[in-house]
Length: 409
Image (cartoon, rainbow, N blue to C red; front, side, top):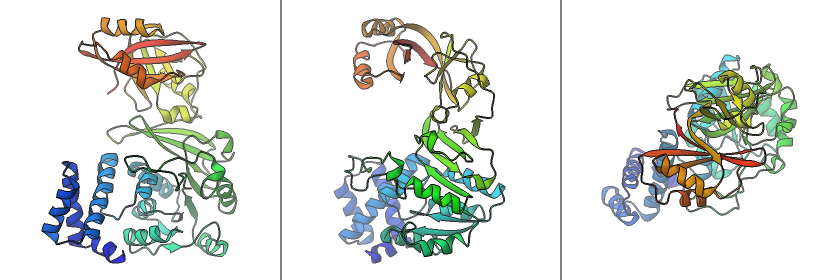
């Protein structure tokens, strides 16, 4: 295996991976791809398999990020990897705070460590898994990645902590024994922070030893688990929730919560609990705003309402409404209301046809029905020329259907 790993990083190995990438993009049959790799590079079967696997993972990153490094990759490693824009933001913030060194505990394939290095920080990378450690050493060269278990080897951890100003940790939140889906992604996420690896309690104890600690966490983490002196940032890009990161009190940041969104141009927009909030609840107007999941997870819907001069249509939902079309923003998706009616499948189907829909997209908040089944049923017989968005909102004890068209770009 080590010979294959070495070869994959040679010029010929990289050329073979790139060839496999292009073939996989065009849907080339795996047997044909194997034959092509053998014809061009005279590769044994194990080398061909490794090339195709690396090409598949690299293509996944390209689809997700628009680019991928010429690194050695693993499935678990790319699933847990942070988006490049968020990594860059985090590294720059550390630099702006005057941080010059950091320990990356559980560095995985090395994505975070590489971003820290690019920002000019001295990095000590640590990994406990033997195979992942070998890959990280290749990816991060000339950084020498240390190998030990940060939970079990207290002496080694102490030595690391004595040589850095700050610490980054990203606890594993996937069940390594769970079955993978058809795409090869790992199975069940571990939702209980006590079962993360390392556990959330271990992270909290680490924060007492080095309060300049950043912990990347599941965005659904309970706010009750966050240290009182910490600042937590939730990130979303183009409407997709990415992560949350908890910055412990040692950085001197104002304690609280922020939501940060990134639009398709890579532009950042932030809202925080220090901003003015509005507790107004009112009727559905001409426009409805669907708050970014970063905003809803951080509990900042009322701050967004004040920022957009809108109001909530129900105190428990992330749908806001207003009469004037809002400026474009990554903090929400905006919709122009065509019609509202009480939830009734037959009446909704009739309204879709009356509004010349050729397709329907459903966005639901508080609705507990089967969205896929409802979408399939409502699409029947549509022959218009409009894509209609159906917003389902549970207002009080009733579900309201809002036929609309998306207005944000």
